[in-house]
Amino acid sequence: MSSSFVIACVGKPSAGKSSFLNAVTDATAKVGNFPFTTIEPNQGIGYYPLDCPCVKHGVTSKCKPRHGWCTNGRRFVPVRMLDVAGLVPGASEGRGLGNKFLDDLRHADVLIHVVDASGTTDDNGRETKGYDPVNDIQWLRGEIDAWVYGNLERRWPGIVRRHTATKAPSVDTLHAQLGGYGTTRDIVQRAMDTVVRTSLIASKDELAQWTLDDLHVFVNVFLDHRFPTIVALNKIDMPDSGKNIASIIKRYHKASRDGISEENIVLTSALAECFLRRMVKQNYIQYMTGDDDFVSNDDGVSNNGVELKELDEKTRRRLGNIRDLVLFRYGSTGVQDVIVRAVEVLGFVPVYPVKSLNFGAAEAFRDCVLVRKGTTVREFARKLHNRLDVGYAGAETVGGIQLAEDDVIEVGSILGSRAPVVAPRLSALAPITQQTRNLGNLQPRRRKYKKAQKGRVPVRVGNSTKGNYMAFGDYGIRVKDGLRLSANTIGAIHSMLRRQLKAIKGLQIWLRVFPDIPVTTKGTEVRMGKGKGAFDYWACRVPKDKIIFEMSGPSLNLELAKSAMRQAGFKLGVPTEFVVADETTRQPKKKDLPKTCIPFQHAK
Image (cartoon, rainbow, N blue to C red):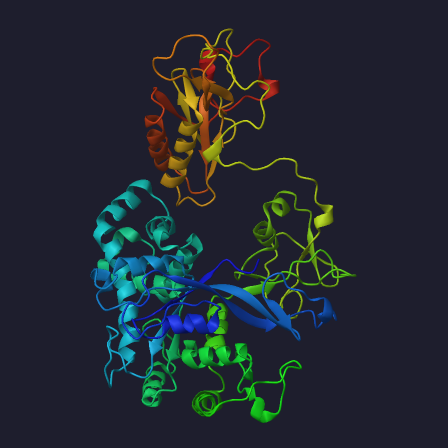
């Protein structure tokens, strides 16, 4: 349990992306001096360093992280890393690996653009001399922009017509179109707020009045929020890297261009870090990632009581070059600084969930979770486990301070320390005996008999109106003829409703029927007798005029609901009726019921 976000390494071929991944993780990605060494994305686990609260609370000896490690009060929290295939100019039009590369970016929350600062490879990854790496920063952002904008531009007239017809909020319409890029509604909302606040678009949030130029402006702002980018200037120990680094820093000094600002540029040497890590494993030197120097046998220092190996002349000379050209010149290899900056640009807050700060003989601070800025205490409980959310009793922080459900977890706002410690009172939770099932596998938990007779769909007599009223939502669908409904059909309708209305925030769907009758089948040309056939699927009998689905949502209007329910009716195979909750369709209160049964026609 550490984080749920992904950091992706991107860049042109032969820029050193796979070497960078190997330098910050334990991965062994294939490295080669030729374009497209990487075809399928490589994955690894990097580590984000931070100060552990075990020092402040005096439990350093008991601090045993479940994931990562803690050394002398320095905690290393694991984060997921992804190395995607190289990008070449024209990828949005299909060059190189084209859309395959761009599609891999959907899984990333932040991008690390690995740039060859030496200028020894051109934009296609071929060896050259004197290439300006500033071009790489410009055209990579341009390719991602062309990918997103091109997909929207082709469908923009239809998007505007649907937006006008449904009268949906602009953010919901844009989120429905941009959801395929792994974005959330909150990101689209922040991008829209930026556009409105800076007046970049004259018509602001009125999509029907946007021109294609306005759409392009919004896409640029959206990419800043969806794909924040850290530039890792790699190969800083090469001969021509110094002048190229100075040129890049001068271009982005006190100015944000191409989605890049000066504070998001980090100098790195991935190969130097890989070599130092290999020397540590072979017990030639003592070194930790992020240090400004290493210790060898020449310094007369042992490694945890084990004497370091003697260096040969070739290894000593190579380590000396790394010390002079990288460590002494820039302070470190820079690979850990890239991870730190990538996490900080997302605004993640480290949280340590504990049951109590009185650890006793138990291990302390076993988990550290990185949560997004703005996460509330209740949302954090839900992230830990759904049982904590269902049976939530309360939470407190250091000093026994009680926290409200909607208190936002922020660095220093509650504790005054770098990492807040939130402690849900697990012992106060009521036992949970029920389990949550999704609608993809609807079936009863238990049944007395494994098989049942076929039976018939009930026909209402005696003025019965059970299930004919709206009970929960604002809109519903009613069948006008009896039928037997299978669990697969119910699940398909539910999935279709969620897909059709995925832009509606806070959408709720209620299922008014449940498949609890086992249906058996026999093969063709099988003789009668020998008992019933084998179990096939679960179903339920739905009488005429029964409401089977209801739904509601804060921004769900009549047109959207009617369109979705119309699509649901196509899957039922019987005539249906769209129902709107009002005085005539709501279940009457008990005091308003007459002494006799309510006439059936009143429920229609």
